[in-house]
Length: 110
Image 1 (tube, rainbow, N blue to C red):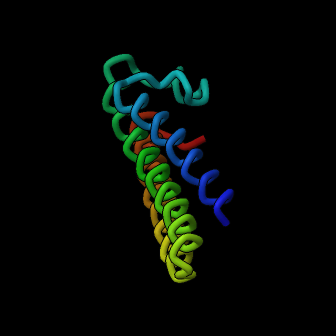
Image 2 (image 1 turned 60 degrees about the vertical axis):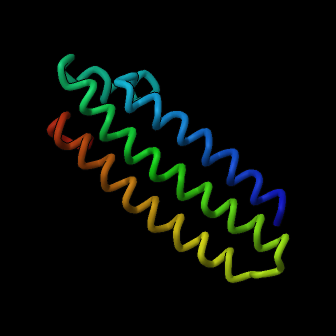
Image 3 (image 1 turned 90 degrees about the vertical axis):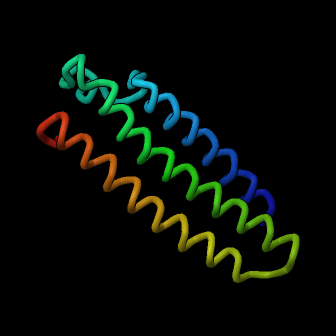
């Protein structure tokens, strides 16, 4: 459980770093379709919205990792359940925000 918790923490932090990069307007890590079909003046607001969704997803992964670590340390398995619910909700919200931004600025998701 500890190894899984550490992996979730590291993955969540990496995801959040990408989200922070996106919020600055640096969308170079996104698929080329999303980079090429965005007007130059829309790159910063697009990046902010995609970055917000990405940060939410990363933070929810960090929450699961913390729940797993604390569960192992404190012998409270309920913390894994709380972390899992938090991660699921965070990913749903993050994906909705990201897809909304893609739809708004690309006019299509695909």
